[in-house]
Length: 101
Image 1 (cartoon, rainbow, N blue to C red):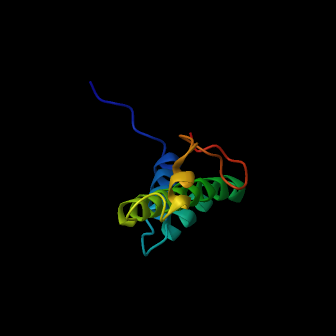
Image 2: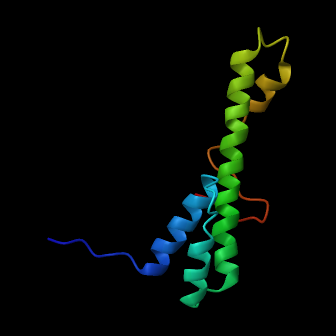
């Protein structure tokens, strides 16, 4: 039984998001051109880029907090580390209000 293939625009959007989130040197510009060539509106491309950037930035912030926590001798020396991790949610919307969940 063969699985249905994804539409090329979906593949290009996933690839674009992965390139942006991973800080790939090519930045997903090839996928942007493919998407535009398929008639995907810039607003949809912008949403994909916005979500990918948000996830990339959120991951970097969480890694920074984790590093700071491991580096700190104790919570008294670095109280901002303890407060930065308190109340962190599973998924936060992007600055433009797009949901990444």
